[in-house]
Amino acid sequence: MPPRDAVPTSTQLSGSASDGVQNDTKVLKNRPKVSEFPIEYTSCSTPCNLQIDLPNSFDGDVYLYYNLENYYQNHRRYVKSRNDQQYLGDLTNVKDCAPFDYDPATKKPIAPCGAIANSIFNDTFSLTYQPVGGLPAIVPVTTQGVIWNVDKDRKFKNPAIPTNGNLCEAFKDTVKPPNWAHNPCEIGGFENVDFIVWMRTAALPYFKKLWRIVDRTTNSVFANGLPKGTYVLSVTNNYPVQSFGGKKYFVISTTSWAGGKNSFLGIAYLVVGCLAIVLGVVFVFIHLKFGHSINELSNVSDIHH
Image (cartoon, rainbow, N blue to C red; front, side):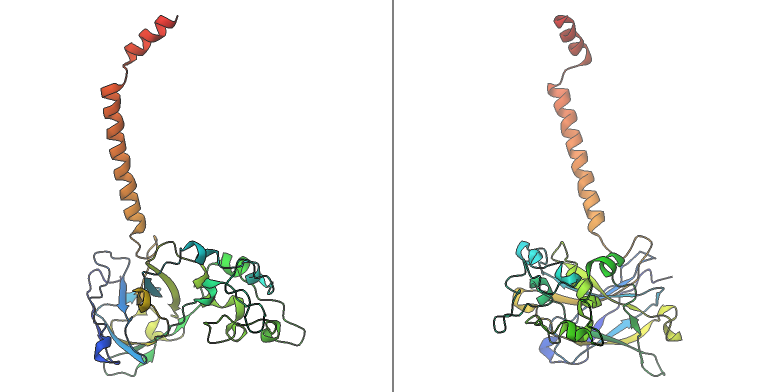
């Protein structure tokens, strides 16, 4: 079973003292089926190495997320700055992608176009297990199961590859987004998992997106999940968030039959339930104070007859 009650801590191993990211990071308490460990790394300078101490094992499938705070992916102009037809392989279709539709210098279409694609999250992570008296082991991860089938099968497709050619030849008449370090053809094009995950925009300014899933098939140490002990999280901290007061976290989590930790639905149900009770009381009061009894309604009916 995953831990019922664990309160691990985080310690910065590298970076300047002013980059301190020591936080109270807590595994979700009192829920036997869901465990979660968030660790903030917003101000951690690259190379960023953070120590994680798991006092209990994370059993079963383990999901690795990145979490952003104060990031408004739901801004109207931001959400509309995309072209779903281009992401299906129509490279020249950049309608609605302005100002990231054409490259100003070459006049070639940008692919993938739009503000969402241009702002793709580009931090990278590596998690290493350091058992007592044993050799360090990199935690194996996989992209299998990270994206939804509907996205993979129906919403994102690479353009047709020329005969005896490659993906970069298919993209040759386009330009990469300004903020991208690599050409899309070098990292899988429109079918890149990180790109697909990022393009599913969040409704709230505090959100987490699935980065990878722990691969339990390649190393027997992790066959049952993540064992308790010490880990080192290595982060390439590229993505800027401090200019708008944002924060970044790396999150280790398990799930239950109801999914992962997400208090939004519970809060929403409580709020709607309370509103329904209040409105019910108000309507009862109005009825008792100003309403008509059945006898009065019967008398009105008799008068009309």
